[in-house]
Image (tube, rainbow, N blue to C red; front, side, top):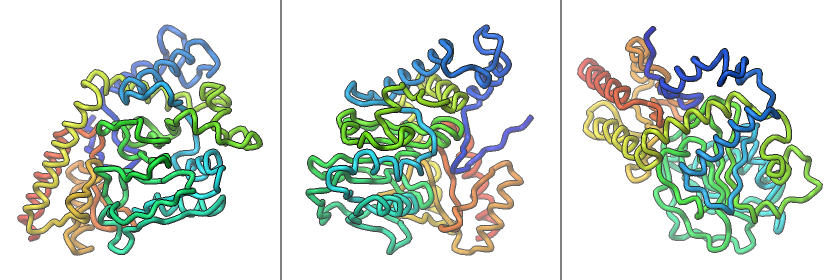
Length: 360
């Protein structure tokens, strides 16, 4: 069997060793006589899986004791509504820096529940940069500031954080969580869909400062109330059990690699390999400003839609898959998440060199 190099933005590549371990435990987990897929979420054995998964994440991210880790469902998209429902309760308003499709969706959902203040936007140049913080006018009555730390579609990332004073920062880290070392204490909430750097689709991780959960109205529907999920240790209803188990295996893999600081070194090396080639290419051009380039989602193009399409088609033949850019951005996108091996990026660069010789 030959595996491809999968550059999909999500669901995305998983570590091969994790897939093999999961395959080995598919029929029976730890002498239980059953698969994790068949296991009651109330059973002691699955409770152990939940506890181990949370403990691993806490250690990997150095999550302080005054934060709650939740394993939820609904994807990061549900958090665009669930977060304002829970913490936009004092003044019914929040600030946001608009940097792409995911902040656009957060604005749309937020406006159904209160007032959204767009402090700055990079829409004028197809989200090719992160707006400057210099002239941001934070609203003193904002319940929080929302940012999307890494832009999956357009390929930008934050390198520093704005300073909104006492206003908590809510960060969508769906496509960058665990890819570099973050100081969790700088955020009120971090949330992430799992299907990029963690595990298969189905589970969403929310890391929330416990004080913020006190803001929630008791009359919120139970499934939309952070407090209910916290009180029930993310087991209020049947959770995505297999996705949580797979997340545990990925956390173990990351721990055994040396943790987040070590994977960050590898990620920066992979990104440098690809960006350095693009910068010196006569055919390929990067889509975003250099100082805001994502480590996870590298976007580029040839400048010709026809040539871009040919590149994606020919790359598939070389087992370099899912390189087409998002439909709203065009061009190409190479998502090089934690599980993408350095060899995959090297193979991509070699193919790009050959393609450039043939078509430049």
